[in-house]
Image (cartoon, rainbow, N blue to C red; front, side, top):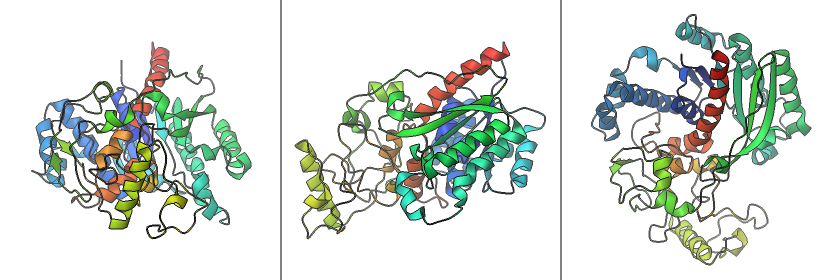
Length: 413
């Protein structure tokens, strides 16, 4: 049976795509505006090609810093790297269409996936935008629709924040439904939590699944796979590090555990990469210690309880949980991790730091051999945090992809 082909729009670091690839789909193209994220996508394309051809030692040499990124890419067919399209999806998508058409030739697209930038819909992001008329980001569903119109996939998967349904009193979502219906698609939107898919974080997202009107399809039901013992599950096998750690490669300090093995987060790599973290000032570290001490007593540190000589934020009525320890319950990964680590304090007071890039990636369910790039090669910490914070958890994507695959393959029999 031929592989199902998909296009990933607003691809980011490729979390959604990774889930579909792991289910046997064939990526036609990844379209992404952020240059650093495009390098991440190309590096992942390189990984999958080398894994399939039995040449992973080249990839591992890159992870260890033995070869440069250019040398890694030179080992990959150019046409595969060209499936990553660094371009902004906007009013004129003709160049993107031309690039995809060259890749597709006469083949068809089965599925389109992607999640347009969500800041304009988010509850947090809406306040500074409330006086901004005609914010282009609220209309990106129209651009997504133009790809549906051109390539006419059987199904599509559209991911966004819960606020998309309520923004502008529901008008944006109503317009989306009407527009996609005119394009020939039925759709359903559901609020899904990554925690129910075996991802160790409480992350709610709207997942819209649409299908061609004549296609006999209904929104799939997903069984819940909640994971317990969060702290030990994520951190137990990673070496202790300190703020500002920059070592490119380290060793695991212990064997894997059931969760990391079954989820394939720890997937055979014998080194730890990007277990790096940002430096912190003395005041922040004192606050981190207070937060850890309180969590040990089953409490959370609120901003109004921080001693005044340490407090950097005068507002003691809003955003009281600015400082938060990654504790026993699922934590929610947010894009703000690219700005500071205050919401992601490591629970070990001996390490006294925010979580590393690798720990953040694990919370999002990225496998340990997933490498996050910057525009420059040297320790792309901030770019990596940004990509991870904005990503769709691959483990969640994989289970969505599986349900869709079973339906589509059933229609091909």
